[in-house]
Amino acid sequence: MRGVAVGMVGLALGMLAWAMSSESTPGAVQAQNEETRSASDHLVCPLADFVRSQTQVSLKAARPGLVPLWKVAEGEWSPLGGAELDDRGMWRGAAPAGSGVLLVETGGGPSGAGITNSAPEALSAWTCGDSSDRLAAVGGATLADDRLDLILYNPYVLDSVVQVTVTSELGEDTPPALREIYLPAGKTVEMTLDEPLRLRRSLAVSAESHPGRIALLLRQTRNGETAITEGVAPHTHWWLPIPDLGQTETHLTIASPSGSPFTYRVDLMTTSGPLPAFVEEDFLPGQLVSIPLSTLPEGVTGIGVVGTVPLVAGLRLEADGLLAIGPGVRETSERWFLPAPAEGAGRDATAWLLNPSGADARVSVSAGGFSFTIRVPPESVRSFDLGKLNASAQSSEGYMVEAQEEIAVVMTTRLQGGAASVAVGAPVG
Picture 1 (cartoon, rainbow, N blue to C red):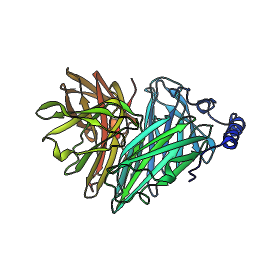
Picture 2 (picture 1 turned 120 degrees about the vertical axis):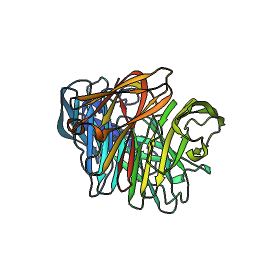
Picture 3 (picture 1 turned 180 degrees about the vertical axis):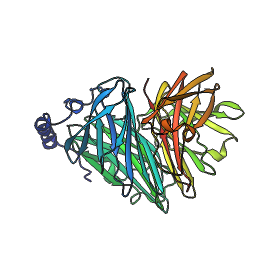
Picture 4 (picture 1 turned 90 degrees about the horizontal axis):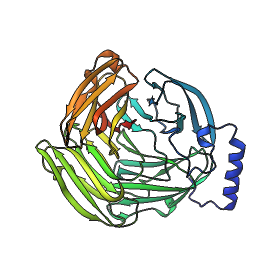
């Protein structure tokens, strides 16, 4: 890790590296000005280095055919051949080993992808797609048995400088060594947060890059459990279906990198009906909001968070042998792609559908030539067990979820031993 600024020499070297690599890199990263280039022609899948586990990627693109894949690591862009999408535009395969980025050249149009990592006693899952000049992740902690790592990725051909801000229950809490990180082109930088920031109950991390865009993962480990959440771009509206994973201690966390005061509102969906504006408060710069769900009314099934400026909202779920963190859904859509869940005996996968509209949503779920329909009433949450679909659906590359109204979709996977993962679906419509 090098927490140093890039001077004129560094920028000149970055431009030289771009010129030398332009013939051996994917077209998606060859633009000199990555700040203005659209990300719609490619997906960025950040990878984490796991031991004794299997990592898979599931992909949905706008059309069938061959999609080029690249592994970006150690300053090199290595072609991996291509993913041959089926007639639905779907594919599933093994992700490259080690850390770095799997870059998918989708060629434009609605697309989405997700990563699942499974080991005999652990699960992790996260969504691909977000590269931005401003990202944030919430849900971390550095209590006695916690290890927390921040991983920054630059899959593009220009060096970048990343300004990192950490917020905890103590307020703005950034260690000096992390305030400014040099992130070379095509490389990954990993930093440990638990050593300089011990005994923090709740943490949020934001990163702002210049020039260009980056990707971000926050990796939490505790007593053999690993939970990963991706960095997401701040937004003014968030939706969070509340997964029922048993007797868990669940916290809603809200943070904003805006640096200015604003007002946020929390709307609740419960088994007894909606509770609009259950919380409405002013948000101060450097503040981190952490709300235990145990303090909310009984029967909460979904949460909406609205801010007058862009923010990030997410969940942290804990229990004996269970640790899961994940962002909310920052936009609703009529079409969603759910990656195929991690394979193996004793794994329960569930999709959670949140309908924030005032009308019934008829939702069609399809995979492997099999489909069924579920009704989600207004301002409510419904779930379905992916494991109860027929055998052809369970062996599919992924699931399409299509609704008559715009909804939010989250998928959970859980081992019988207790480990679990939470991942947001990918909007593709």
